[in-house]
Picture (cartoon, rainbow, N blue to C red):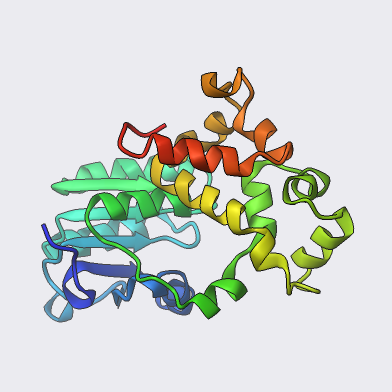
Length: 240
């Protein structure tokens, strides 16, 4: 199967109030965007993959109506993205998706998980220009994702805690791109090989290859490159 193109592969459905947010979030995929509710006659019709982006909790009736519209538009492969919502809301949405009887439907609760689901369906983001990458890396988000304190990540990057604080505040970042190269590579490997819902569990699980130390401990000890190398060694095997 060839990689899907802009117009053929991905449609992101969202509410009008969240359209600008969705365009920013999904920009690297260059999808088509469709607001809901919409007239079935003007909808894009059958596509390879549709993402329903629920940026804020909605009333069940509104979600049901949206899902019915997508089903009437012959959407078959549907990914429901519900970031920052409660487990109860996600469960209710899953139940509603089941009632609509989509041929293929899954849902994601965070961005890495959604990226994995899209990649599994041959929907891939377009590479950012190198100059863009320097300004888009969110160091604070990366630190929180890994469950590290500022002191721990500063040690991992071999910088002072004050330097890290400045970088997170967007100050004095001329060396940040160089110093975070291994960290960015590690996060990329995690996105590719660690199943997103299990990421926190993996970070705190002992690794046999490192004498029972956990990935979080290894990162805090400055052994980020060791983890990257281990991922590369397992590249041809099964996900971690």
